[in-house]
Amino acid sequence: MLTVCILVLALLCLALLGRTFLGSVGNGTAGSEGADTVSQSAEVRTDPEEQVGEVEPDATPTPEMISLTENMIHTGDLILVNSSYAYDFEANESTIDLVNIRNSQSFYYQVEKTDYEVAGRMLPSLDQMISACDAAMGTSETGITSAYRSYEYQQNVWDTTAEQNGEEYARAYVATPGYSEHHTGLAVDIGIFYSDGSQGSFSESQNAVWMDEHSSEYGFIRRYAEDKVSITGISNEKWHFRYVGLPHAVYMKQNNLCLEEYLEYLRTQTGAGNPLTVSTSEGTYSVWYTTETSIQKPSGDYRVSGDNIAGYIITVRE
Ligand SMILES: [Zn+2]
Image 1 (cartoon, rainbow, N blue to C red):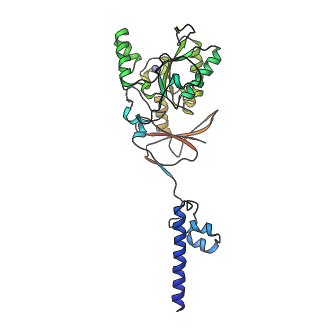
Image 2 (image 1 turned 180 degrees about the horizontal axis):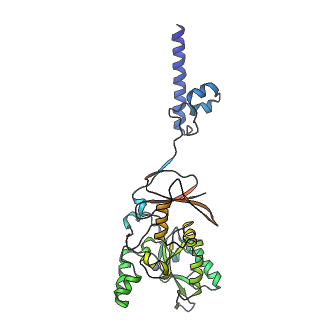
């Protein structure tokens, strides 16, 4: 009889505990905090709230994971678009976030054509860079001569350039349609606009010197430098700036790396266990490359960008 009583009592206890646990799952309070084992709880725990987590069948906390998709290889601020790697229009269709510069700029500066667009997420940085350049020059002459380009637009640019300057010139300065950074919405060409409406030469201006020196502070890189022509395949263009964000632009500038070299560095020298650490005025960041399609969710502010080749760059702000 005694044995039966104990058995009934034990079953009752189990049933009660089970119900409490199931209830707590429903309202989301049984989480990773319950790391202790059931036997420990029976001995030392008295707080019923605490015990709720203790009966979790698998008591080891599971790290939160994030999935990295095939699409994500081809999207983000660090995607490489050059003569070897085409821009993936389809992958970017839902994320490109184009905005009209004229309608969305935070202060007035010249835009060669009123329908020019860029990726909305980089426009605040572009505004700040132009504002700082104008302030340093003591003028208001910095503006935009080219921004986002569709495939058709790039085809048109190529055809017109080839017609006017010959095909050799077009091959040196104009990307083949599908292979232009301007497709990303993250690249702009900078120009000089005088108050009478005429344009000056940006390449010969002090604005170009200032921007070459300071664009990285705003997340932009001068994409096609003279000493990198053999790698980028594009001639020296003082006017073409590409947004890659922080801390990448700062690191690339400090170490004189073009985007091709920087991505190669991340791919071969970094990983989840040995990230690159970069300090900027905005904070300290950890950066690493991975080809894993499921990774532990980084703690803190993080971003994922594809390299448009085969992997992902994880950027975490500490
Ligand atoms: Zn350009």
